[in-house]
Length: 310
Image (cartoon, rainbow, N blue to C red):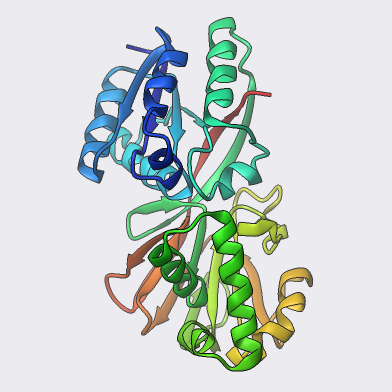
């Protein structure tokens, strides 16, 4: 059946809090498409192939950033060289950083209602093209390693929401200022080598590196302003500040924007790079992965079409 295909992730914290949500979304969707509650990554891949065979026109994703990343990855595998359908984000996760970057706000029910209404009346004509990044077969928009992964692991172990995440960051800052155990566990550095197109290799000690095609990080920090209007490159940032100085130099890292190799961070735009590091843990849109080896390649992927309903 062509029309709208909805992927909903029952494992996201927001959907777990309200198990009746898929039924409500199905009611709102009506006869305009089909809804799938994906139970695993294998099931997601099967649904992607079914939606491809049904020639859906719009893919609506009800989940957070990790669900969006995994869903687009599965659909790219299913579609191969064929263009993906337009994507609508329903903000169904705890963290919806990608949707916020695109200016998409509202509840999943309201966003789906607007989508169905616009689709049935033929008024869906606002589209944002956003390039993705690819690493080890995964597709996403914000790569991070180092401290960001350590913070995510702490966050996931406590299973809290956005307020809990903010409180955890506050505790981490206090721990860093007082030399507490939490800071020692999370704020640690590693030695990396960065190899980028057309640039000399950079060997440095870093507490974390990032690669992004979206401007803002979680909590709205605009760490990647140079991706705006730049569809041929992503922005890379390596934080060089030592762990014991990170809290004090954080304002400079977050709010001083320039493409340079400065004392607190290295920042540049590129279409591809390699990171060599003995720390094999990284995250892509909030999902944590273990690299296949100490060397990994990040490259610019295809442009993804996102629908705006208002």
